[in-house]
Image 1 (cartoon, rainbow over the protein chains, first blue to last red):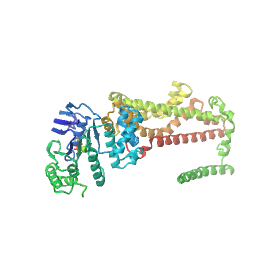
Image 2 (cartoon, each protein chain N blue to C red):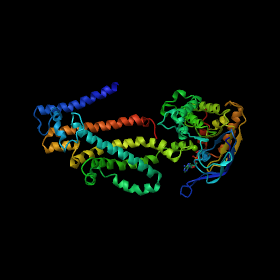
Image 3 (cartoon, rainbow over the protein chains, first blue to last red):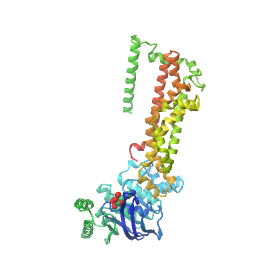
Image 4 (cartoon, chains in turn purple, orange):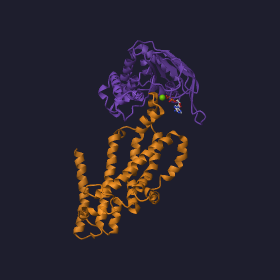
Amino acid sequence: MGEIVCTNVTKVWGVGTTREVAALENVSFSVRHGEFVVVIGPSGCGKSTLLMLLSGLEMPTGGTITYNGEPITGPDADRSLIFQQPSLFPWRSTIDNVAFGLQLRGVPRKERRQQAEKFLRQVGLREFANKHPHELSGGMQQRAAIARALCLGADVLLMDEPFAALDVQTRFHMQSFLLDIWLGSGKTVVFVTHHIDEAAYLADRVVIFTARPGRLLDSVDIDMPRPRNVISPDFERYRALFVERLRSEVTRAFQEQELAEMLDTRIK
Amino acid sequence: MRSLAVRAGWWVLSVGTMVGLWELAAALDLINTVILPPPRVFIREIENQAQFLLPQIGVQRIGGNFVALTAIWASFLRIVSGLALAFIAAVLLGSLAFSLRVFHKLTYPVITLLAPIAPVAWIPFALVAFGIGDGAAIFVVFVGIFFVLELAAVNSMKNVDQHYIDTARVLGASRRQVMWHVIFPAILPNLFVIMRVNLFGAWMGVLTAEMVGVNTGLGTIVLVGRQMMNMNLTFLGMAMIGIVGYLLDAGLGLLQRRVLWWKSVAHV
Ligand SMILES: Nc1ncnc2c1ncn2[C@@H]1O[C@H](COP(=O)(O)OP(=O)(O)O)[C@@H](O)[C@H]1O
Ligand SMILES: [Mg+2]
């Protein structure tokens, strides 16, 4: 299970203060069970806000969000959120970071470490179990963060530009790695990015947002078998389509710069 | 290992030079050795152990032949108890202020007013309130450090990276669990820094209290030396004060590196 339905979702930050910001306006879309959806849009359009709402950390100011048919009322380990910034706790070893969720549930130390080790192996970090986050590279840290989400049996992975801080080469590896984990797992992924190539490479479907306040601009199914060839004409076509759709949305002054950033690709 | 040897070498050289010049000046009769006895002389004062059992210098004999230890122990225990109590109280009240806005608003102005009062300024009150003895000295350390530490605790808690808190919440942490597993470990390094910075102020507080009324401990030794016009005793006391203060700081530093090593490599 892992179906999410947003109906007319609106989010205004700082309601009643002088610094009211409408981040999302009237957003309706749904994510099917097991689907890999990528959300793309210009920076500041409310992508992170959307994931906060889907995770349950924040409540919408209008509209409804349901998960498996039930309204979302708060965070739930079933829907794990992974940030761009490394969010491993620096004072815990890698394995204790991965086992943290189980610890919160009161699973005894030995048992939770056994579980965690299983997932560390899955993400290729078994030898790093007793290292601390600062001893891991950025890519390894994100893999550990993914293992931490998997360790709690999350059905939905909400990922907020998780690879944006990584260098181009590592980002490419992480994308393939994520697909390996996801394929056949039945897990639902909502992945936020502002990289056009990343969207076209990963997604079953790409959801495009307008500039702030974010509204749904378009939703494009990507009809390409995996693993995708990033230098194929098909890939080029999707890419051109996204650039076209986004061109009108990035602010005029920074248009060229921002589009260039969004195209900062791994085949450069 | 080599760098340790080099550091030790400089240490010996530095202290050796000072002692050497001092001894030389004494040998050449350049200084009045009654007022300014050289180390070789005042250190020998330690052989006169009986004097440390005078009711106004030492405390009750704690066994062994080295009775001066009772005075060292008395001062040491006072500062350590004061620090520990201040730490516990600051974390407890800090947590309360952090989670309860009303409590924070109510206490903040008072605490900011009390924080700048130097520990020594509390001594007269402490002597009246607690009488002569450990209570007064511990209280002086406590007030000397508690207010600053409480302010630092609240401030550090507010500055804990929101991603760590959100991550824990997504993984299912309750408010209490967030406090215990995220906020406490995250602020610990800051609190240690504050403790170390204020250590010497607190140490001064203990010694002064011992001079003006507590009547036992290292501070008293220095004063009694003056009263009996025995500068050997005074300088011996000063030497012990220096060494114990140095060891306290080194001990705290060691604890800091041992337990909070990750802070030097990560930023929270
Ligand atoms: N916690 C918050 N409090 C107040 N305003 C916020 C908060 N988070 C985001 N915003 C505002 O909402 C808008 C959308 O931000 P965000 O969702 O982070 O955009 P994106 O992730 O697409 O770059 C921005 O104007 C931002 O300043
Ligand atoms: Mg964002």
